[in-house]
Amino acid sequence: MLTRRNVLGRLPLVACGSTLWGCELVPTRELDSMRERIESDIRAWDAIDDHRTGTQGDTLTAQWLAHEITAAGLDPHLDSFAFQRRVLHDCWVSVGTQRADGVPLFDGAYTGAEVQRGPLCSIQEGSIQEASTQEGSPQENLCQVPGGIGVTRFEPTGQEATTAALQNARRNRQYNAIIAIASSDAVEPGLTLLNADAYLQPFGPPVVQVATEHALWLEEAAAAGADADFVAHMSLQHTQATNVQTKVVGADASLRPLVVMTPRSAWWTSTSERAGGIALWLATMRYFSQHRPARTVIFTANTGHELGHIGLDHYLTSESALIKGAHAWIHLGANFAANEGALLFQASTQQMMAQSLVEFTNNGETPDYIMPVNDRPLGEARNIYDGGGQYVSILGDNRLFHHPDDRWPGAVDLNQTMRLTQIMLAIARNLSEV
Image 1 (cartoon, one colour):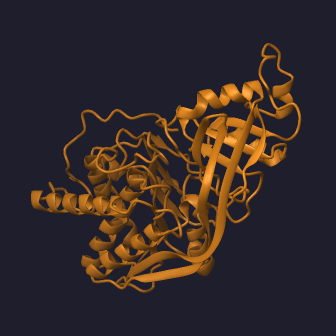
Image 2: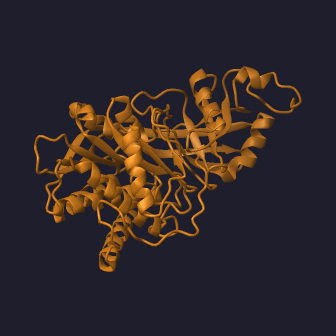
């Protein structure tokens, strides 16, 4: 996780020096109108409870975005593709009279409706062999024999040692099933979920993710080697998933296009995680619909974020020449609208980084962390990096990451979202010109 930012003492909402607005204060009515649109867009996102890929909520989100594109005077394109959706049924674990409902990992195996039973054992950080030979804790049941049901903690960010231990346990196949307890070191306690990066190539045994509140009794049961019941019942449904696209044709067809992309799917509602990118994507689209750029600007909002970026992968397969052929990609990533979230900025070249940071300075902002130019970036920008394309990218961290309580209004910092909208609009304007 990134370092928490100090949100006190911010500068007022101005853009003096910005190439978008000119070296003048932005008229109050324009700021008020922009703020109202951003709030309205975030509220509209939050009104749809479930944004998981292939669900009804995902379809409603696509229809809403298409309506907003039409309202801006542009032509929406809904690009649907075949998708095999995992449909949730019963998913729980129990020991005696104690039970925890949960959600399976979406890139692992799953069970039928029948209940599995087995002895619990603790999975420690590091390998099974290392854990089983540690001294000083003979009372702990450390999975010294194959089989059974492993118990471990994890963080939804995917970057901590506990999550690495979970992933290692999935790969070594010494367990019939695994119970993964959401930790609360990086995020708030609750039923937070891990992204399914291997959705199209699932591996390992069934894994049930359960909320933080169940940690004590489950870990005590694992230490005692108690028997547990386990079910992770899912089925597959052949359906479709949809990316949403539009473009503003530039004045000079000889110039390479600019692409503005954002994910549009998530676990739960994920308002501060995802709605900031959606609101900024819409604001950029509306701006260029009224102010014709020199370059053509392509807009793509892609589903499948939580499932290994499968929507973006579909888009890049059909538009493979665009990865390197675009002048640049603007990635509007996760969490930058979150309350008290640290801000990360990424760019593919030192020139793009320097030019972009000027706009942060002009608007009284400083990223908490700047990704080194040569490092593989986070979020969907990594797809562009892997393909050799050029990009700028904004994202952050969030104490409600992948958490059911990530909802409007409490999770969102609207003032910060306003400032970042102005900054990214200015960066987009710079990149759209010669």
